[in-house]
Length: 393
Ligand SMILES: NC(=O)c1ccc[n+]([C@@H]2O[C@H](COP(=O)([O-])OP(=O)(O)OC[C@H]3O[C@@H](n4cnc5c(N)ncnc54)[C@H](OP(=O)(O)O)[C@@H]3O)[C@@H](O)[C@H]2O)c1
Image 1 (cartoon, rainbow, N blue to C red):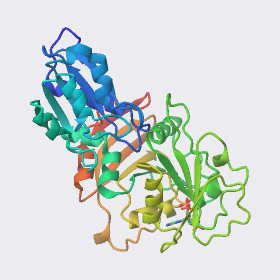
Image 2 (cartoon, rainbow, N blue to C red; image 1 turned 180 degrees about the vertical axis):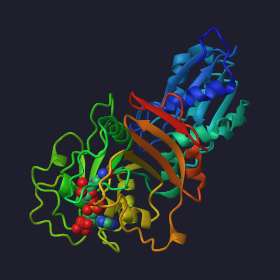
Image 3 (spheres, helix red, strand yellow; image 1 turned 90 degrees about the horizontal axis):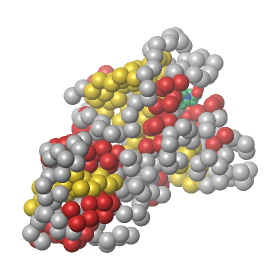
Image 4 (spheres, protein in one colour; image 1 turned 90 degrees about the vertical axis):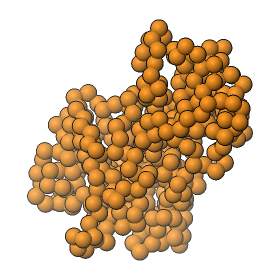
């Protein structure tokens, strides 16, 4: 980032706005992450901001406040089209007009029918408006929210940790710890960025997982969700029932809840081909404001998500360990012949301590998914120490 004395290029300014937006990951739902940088009339940084939480000021408002009078005649760089509606806060388009900004450059158009129209309002007020600068990077940084608006369900990232021979547990079901402490710390970062962390009843029974975020400064705890058709997997005293984060147990409409007084929050869902219906689960989470899901397994539940076409991104941690027996990372996903294989495009590989992290998105890439091949915005929560990253296109 240039100092105050130096002029800043358009691309530098938008890159900074994208980095600012990333600071809101995990805490803005059901709103998007948005960053904004304002340059004064001479092209020098005057103010910046990002959307921190739903109900709080939008990025543009933070940036305008910081810029004060220096916004007059300047340029606002925003990662998402400024909103045009009065919700819990006033329209950003009006705030930019009143501040006397001469030009607005935004990366991605707002697909939300309620908020769109900001660009039109700005133009009508005589402001020069441009769209599309670093659009792919900005879209990648906001992919969870954009996916949720476009598909009406949360973005799903399936994460697993496996041995080099693709096993996620030993034959005796023990799976702690296949990957390193560094990889596990990286998973806490993923949890911090997610609105909900989901596991199946098998994992709840075998591992008694906690699923809350540890050691990520300022993290908003995700909703912990167990997909437990018969409401029998989460016993009183289970670690997931502590107060560290909210917890939701998804059960069948007809599940017997007689002995379930210890379950804090239960949602009843229709049964699917196997267990609970995945689209219904995602719809119920969406209704609760969840825009991003981190699916932490196990293989049987992950297989159903893949079969339902409900995995948008895969992060696999591969440890240089061999087991030779034990369950594979992914269970039955309804794929029986190689022609049906779900092909993925690798978007990043990274060394995480002694392990390898592979990030991939399904092919054929959808408009929403393809943007994820772009680099993680500068300033996004970075990898843990001792890691190297390679991004591929
Ligand atoms: N290394 C890793 O990354 C990792 C991560 C997680 C787990 N694990 C390991 O995986 C093992 C457990 O895996 P798992 O595959 O047995 O359990 P799982 O995937 O966590 O849970 C499977 C269970 O979820 C329930 N379920 C509800 N709706 C479902 C649906 N639509 N599709 C599929 N299942 C649904 C089913 O039981 P009901 O219908 O009876 O509820 C099903 O048997 C453990 O050994 C654990 O340590 C490893």
